[in-house]
Structures are given as structure tokens and as C-alpha cells.
Length: 481
Image (tube, rainbow, N blue to C red; front, side, top):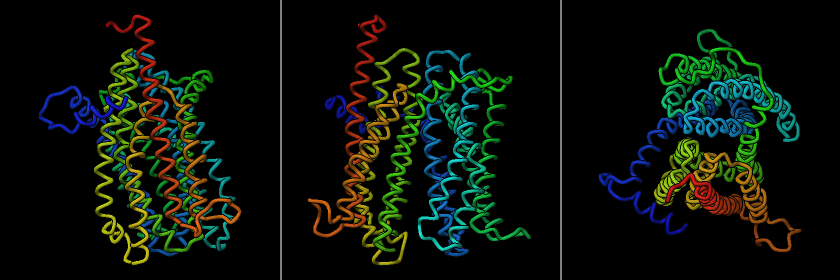
């Protein structure tokens, strides 16, 4: 496996002019991935706009958005993971040429998405009770709770949008994602400006206005995707909304068997990072600020391997649908290798530019110094983070999600958070601990370890699974030679 992996990495770095099978696959992956990347960056831009605009209104509104968005993001990312099952399922049907099955799958997936969206809406509203235990001022508590209550109106729309997102990606149509996300960003910025500050006679709603703009924007993005699918020629053969269809629990249950483990894996990762943010808070404003800056920049860089992963799920799923496990394994290793090659470059860039990155975010010298230190850990985990996300996305292309879920739970809750607490907090009851609490740096060391364990285990599992699929196909006579 190591020889195969290193050989692919070497070939990927050859001049583009050399016409090779690998460069053809890299081009196909990038063709799918770049619109997804721009769409992901536009989505991140919405949260940046939320923070920036409320930050210019008042510290209470900024705190409310920060707290409310933390709850919102945990539920949002979990739902996003569940709905990724549709990508793998539809990609298999595309690869098999069973286009007649896709409309039925999509009708059932929309029922599933609507139900999950309603459940997510209820969960996030109930979760505001946690604010009562965070020793917040009554004003911030009220604003944060109201932010969550208002923004939750967009949860069903988001779930259904992600179902259509997976559908269009599986058909190799990723440009709608980019265009609609950019339109959503424009609407979010304008809506925030109107409702947060109360322009043109509208009431000044502050954090609540930010939530309202985002919630409405999600419904408009869903409407935009539905309009695009109805009118674009690429969807004529698989258009799902020709007639109504009652929900069928057997179909929805089979989708959930694939999707729920992805949602749990996403929840494990995002909740671990959120937990680190909460635990670092005890070390003061400098640690909190440095941790947030490092996390924000790392999230931006992470968008590239994540976008490659979305494309990889589609490509691997289509190959498996065609009954070609050899090509599926080839695509998997090309995708992981491309992601790792990018991670090497990003790690070098972060290491060399960490002081400039910190200075771009803040003028506070103490925050800059700690941020530069934490960014060293962020540079290290670029390698494992890029590897684990693309390996897990390749596995989703095989419609295998339970083992990756267990690996993520083990990596983040078995290693990353426990080690981070030992190093970061240095609790006195621990028989072995550092003489002095390492603070934010200790938690990031734990995250580096957790991501490294996840990356190694997922790559090993991907190798074994892909080899097993090839051997099974060969033994059944589906592979000649």
C-alpha cells in the first residue's frame, strides 16, 4: 500500500503536459471540486458577515451571534453529514446506468430531509437551555436564545437543500452549488445590513436580524436549487418532481443506515473543536482569541480537501455503480494523494507565514504570539486532516460509513479530547501530567494526535476494503485477468 500511495503522489507532481491516466483523473476530480470549493467559501463568508456586522453594533450582539452560531453549527454540520448519504446512493445508480431509479430515491430523500430538518429545529431550540448554565448576562442570554429560535426556521430548508446538493453533485453538476451559494452570500450580506442596523425604516434587530436574514436566505437557496433543477437540461432524465409520492419508511431507513453514521462522525469532529473552544475560555481572552483565529484560518484551508472529498465520493460511487472496483480504488488513492500533496504545501505556507497570518487578524501582540504558536500545530495537522477527510469521503463512495464513524469517535473522544485535557488543564488528580497547564497549545496537541490516528486508521481501512472488493469481484468472475 505504501509503495502504491507514494508512486501516485510522485506521479501527481509530474508536469501537467504529460498525458497520464492520473492527470486525467485529477482533472476530473478538480472539475467537480472547484465549484464546490467556491460554494463552501461562500457559505463560510455568510458566517464571517454575521460576525463582522454584529461586531460593529454591540459586544452583546456579537456574543449572542457567537454563542448561538456555535449551537447552530453543531446541528447544521450533523444534518449535512446525514444528507451526504444521498450523494453515495445516487452516484451508485448513475454508475450503474439505473437513471430510472433516481427520481424515486430523490422523492424519498426529500421526505427524509424534511423530517430531519424538523427534528433538528426542535433539538436546536431545546438546546438553548444550556445558556442558563454558562453564567451569561441576562441580556446576552436573551439575545443568544432569540438568535437560535429565529435562525432555526431555516433548518428544514437547509436539510432539503443538502439533499438536492447531493443529487446534483452525483450527476456531476456542481456549478449550481457555486452560483446559488454566491447568491445566498449576497442576500445574507444585504439582509444583515438592512435588519441588523435597521436601514430604510426597518427595525434595528441586531443579532435577531442576522438570524432572520440567514433563515430566509436558506429558504431562498432551496427555492433557487429547485428552480435550477426544473429548468436545466442536465436533470431532464432524472427529474424527481413529476408527481407526488408518499414517504416509504423502508426506503428512508436504508438511507439513514448510510447517513446517520456520517452525521455522527461529523458531530464528533465539530463538537470536539467546539469543546476545545469552551475549555480554553478559562485561560482568558488572549487564549480564546488565539484559538479562534487559528481555528478560523484552518477552517478556510480545510475547504479545499473537503471539496475534493465531495468530488471523490461521487467519482468512487459511480465507479462502484459500474461494477468496477479496480477503478474505484484507483480514484480513491488519486484523491487521497492529491489532498495530501495540497496539505504539504499548505503546511509549509502556514509555517512560514504564521506571524503574518496572526497580524492580519489582530493587532494585539500577545494574541499574535500565541496565535503564531498554535498555527504551528495547525500546520502539522494539515497532513492528517486532509488525509482523513478524503479517505472517509472515498469510503462513503463505497457506501461504507459505520467503521469510519467508530474511527472518528475513537480519535476525537478516545484520544484528542482526553489528551488535550491532560496537557491543557494539567488536573491535579492525574498521576501523570505536565508540571504546568499548557493551555490552548495542549489542546491543539491533542487535536493533532486525534486527527493523525483518524487519518492512519481510515487509510488502512480504505486499503483493506478496496482490496477486498477487488478480490470479491475477481472471485465472482466480474474482473477478467
